Image 1 (tube, rainbow, N blue to C red):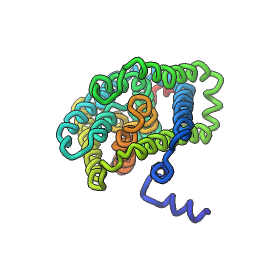
Image 2 (image 1 turned 180 degrees about the vertical axis):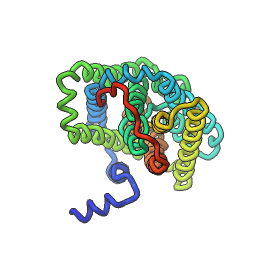
Image 3 (image 1 turned 90 degrees about the vertical axis):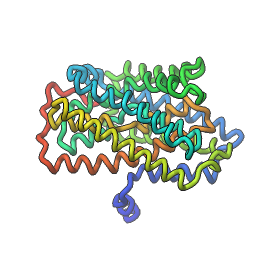
Length: 337
C-alpha cells in the first residue's frame, strides 16, 4: 500500500484529479438510475449546503475588511476575475462555436465567471514569495462576491442555457448557498478554531462533496446520452482553449501590474489570484444553475482548467521564487480563513 501511495505522489498530476477521473469512470460504468437518481440528487443537495456552511465558518470577516484597505490591488484582481475573464470567455465561445457542442461552449463561459480559488492562490503566492496577506484577502473576497456575482453573470451572459435568476434558481441559491454560508458565519466564533484544528475533516467534506456532484452530473449525462456528442479531439481542443485563456490572463495581469507600478510582491498576488478559477465552488454551483443532464459537459472545461492552472502556476511560482522576490511585508495580517 505504501508503495502505491509513493507512486501516486510522484506522478506529475494532482492526485485529486485521479479521484475525479475515477468518479467519472464510476458514473460511466454504473450511472444512477431510477430510485438511485433521487438518492444521488438528495446527497448533492446536502453536500453543497455543507460545503458552503464550512466556507462561512472558516472565512474570517477580518480578512475581508483588511483586504479592502489595499483597494488598488483588490480592484485589479476583481477586474481580472469578473471582467477580463468573462470577456475572454464570450469571445472564445464565438470563435470556437463551429467545433464544440453547445454545452461545452456554455461551460467555457461559465468557467470564466467563477471566483478565484483560495488555497492554491495563497499557496502559490507563498511559494513565489509574494504578498501572502493580500492574496488571502483577494481570494477570500473573490469567493464571497462570487456567491452573488457568478449566478448574476450567468443570467446575463447565458440567458438561453436554462440558468440564472429564475425563481427556482433563486430559491436553490438561497437555501443551498446563502443560508448555509450565513449560518456558518454566525457560528464561526465557536467553530472557527475547531475547524482550523481539524483540517482533515473539512478537506473530506470539501473534496467529497465535489466528487458526489461530479458523479451525479456525469450519471445524468450518461443516462441522457450526451457523451456521444464528445470526441477525444474535442477534449484536447477544450484543454488547448483553457491553456490559451490562462496564458492571456497571466500575461495581462503581469503587464498591467508592472505598468501601474505595483511591487513584485503585489504583482505575484495579483497574477495568482487573478488567474485562478475555483473548481470547489464552481462544480456545486453548476449543479444548481444548470439542467442536471447538461452539467457533466458544462463542468468539463473547468475540470481541465483546474489541472492546467496547477501545472502552469507551479512553474511560474518557482520562476518568481528563483529570481529573488523579497518576502512580503505584512501589515496587520488578517486571520486565516
